[in-house]
Picture 1 (cartoon, rainbow, N blue to C red):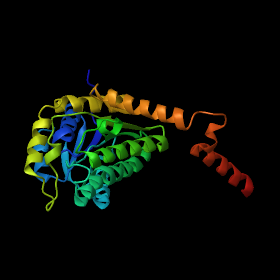
Picture 2: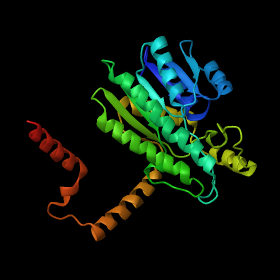
Picture 3: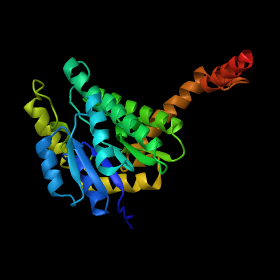
Picture 4: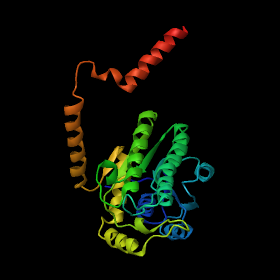
Length: 290
């Protein structure tokens, strides 16, 4: 049964289409106040027409940190804070490892890594100052967990980075700040064709193939419901496609084999473990200062 979210204040990036729009709709249907954000103003207008009366939109390029700061100021001024953030904005450019361009790499990493860091860091600071804390959901991908396919090298790298960001924020966050990472597989969205800046055209064949592939994905409203439910439960990993576990297990098996052969566990094997070393150095410095 879906939990009601009356008066919950939520922000969703990448909400002009796809998963972001569906998450905004799911939140609105449960009674939340939603600010839907995207760089695509026309798409946001369509999203707004599908949301409740207490919802609004904000045009924001998450790869521009100043714009994210402006978004946060708007959220504070209009809603008094934020209870749930879905850092969902993301882009992809298909192309083999040796054929993708430097401009495409900059674009993907700018949105998928820098943009995610900007959004989550700014709103984490806001939530840390709220007595009630908050919930942050990163949108990763099954690519974050070891799934891979040809033509998605930089996208895959970016989604590994998103997992790293989520893990560190979870480790550093206070108890009242809950962190999740949503790792869906193929979902029926327009990810492959949207958001490209001027001067960075996609090949028409790639766009057509992407559209056909995405059309066979999980219904987007189902994926959005999973994302919202998992975030509310406080799950760290939120997964949707059972086949992804095969890729994760294959990676783990290869890692275990490598450690068994090259770095088997031995007595005092953790003497170089970084957290233990940091604690020891901090203790030494504290003692020296006394």
